[in-house]
Picture 1 (cartoon, rainbow, N blue to C red):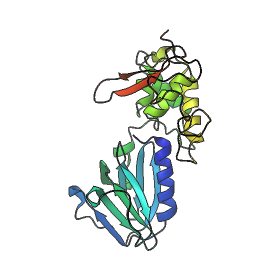
Picture 2 (picture 1 turned 90 degrees about the vertical axis):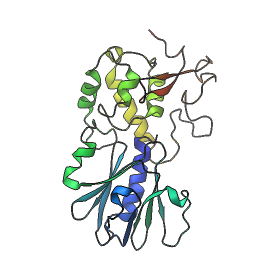
Picture 3 (picture 1 turned 180 degrees about the vertical axis):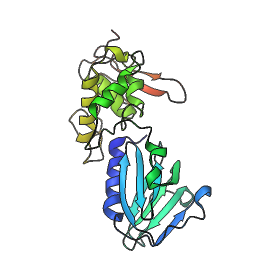
Picture 4 (picture 1 turned 120 degrees about the vertical axis):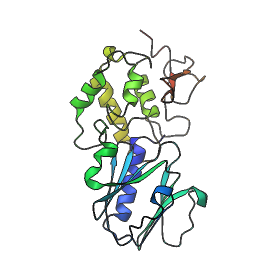
Length: 261
């Protein structure tokens, strides 16, 4: 699932291309929006809220989308061949005179009033990539369930928005936290600060790097490296599902660098 930095980059590209431009054609290919036509309206701005993407259109309308596992937004010049996927995977097309924005396999695509965006993102905790990120609120949110595992608490977007399985896994490794460590025994300020620092460090490039080495096969400490040697101590990296279905995620950790106690 794309994480906060990935959505932020997609939002930035869409905003730079579309903001301030009139929509010359809109084509919504989901049943609930099949008759919707926003042509003639102006794309005011495109903003990210955690992993959610909000496209604000004149007239008080917001196009809300969430990428989840398979969704993506692509930008093309008029007449350019689309390369994002098969035509039947397209969920929406938004055109201006100079750009065509195409949303592929978007599992969430809906219209809400701009003044009612809280109905779709109001449940989110502080956005780690927001300039006005509320650090103290994020820490307080995490601390509300002291017996919960730190892994589940960091993934819960109601606590703080933007962390996915990748960053959660790498943050736990870098702080020496076993994935099942209870929140009550964790320095939550350190976890929040490191999470924000890692997301912000990866904003300017597509590769997500936590090791400081931006080369294939060297970018992560433990994420998606089961059975391989820990880069720090050489111990074999373990993996197991964590959390209750359907919100369970695969966890990776080094048993030596991230002891249970």
